[in-house]
Length: 81
Image (cartoon, rainbow, N blue to C red; front, side, top):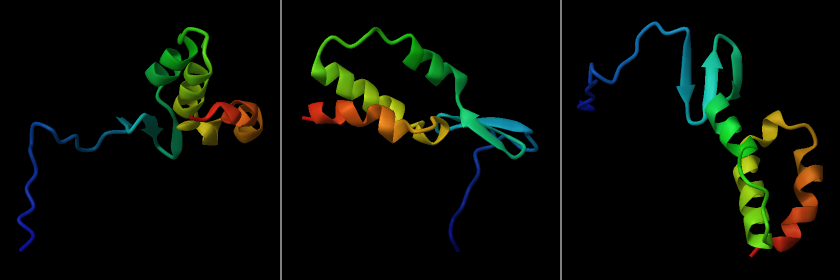
């Protein structure tokens, strides 16, 4: 007996789309959550090496959606703490 329980107030059944762990999942498509991408885009330009590295780490979460991400981000990795 696994003692598994569902909280009916937190369940969503028969949904065609869901936002989960920073991703929007719909049918067979997975894409970054628009609010998270907007927050990254609206981030002020880093002025220190630490801020630049922090931005790269935040953007890295979505690296599979950014072609050649490692090439783009590579120069900033030299500022890693």
